[in-house]
Length: 151
Image 1 (cartoon, rainbow, N blue to C red):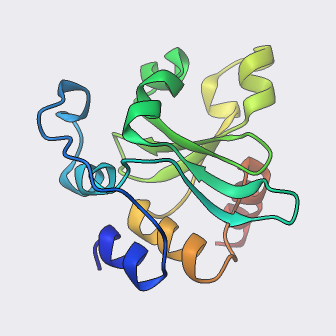
Image 2: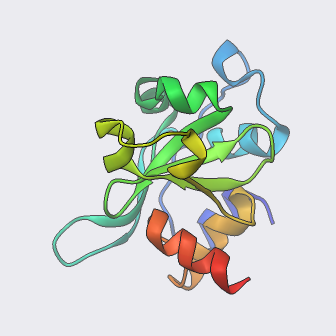
Image 3: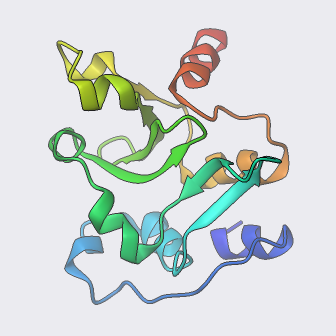
């Protein structure tokens, strides 16, 4: 199932945009280009009664402004954030999503980057399917660590 079908089947409002001519996106794998072609606007998944969201996915326009130098150096693309502000990332190396602990990142309270990064065992399509269809998915770095321990 492609991402636009997943959004449509679950009544997720999205805006189609063409990223093919943008050099920023040229190095991405095909599945991520298809993802970004659906990201003409920021999407908030699983909103709480207080207005926050379990997962926020950046629009194509916003994503360029949200990149972190250290994430870029570690071959990660910041694509959104979780409920508590942990950065949701896509690894250009492994093609998996993961989280970067935001407090440790901004306060620089880590020795090596791997101490603040948790890679999940699935790609963008599987992550979105979990987030959209059942809400039983890691919404921050701590939940990602807990999930990894159970696998």
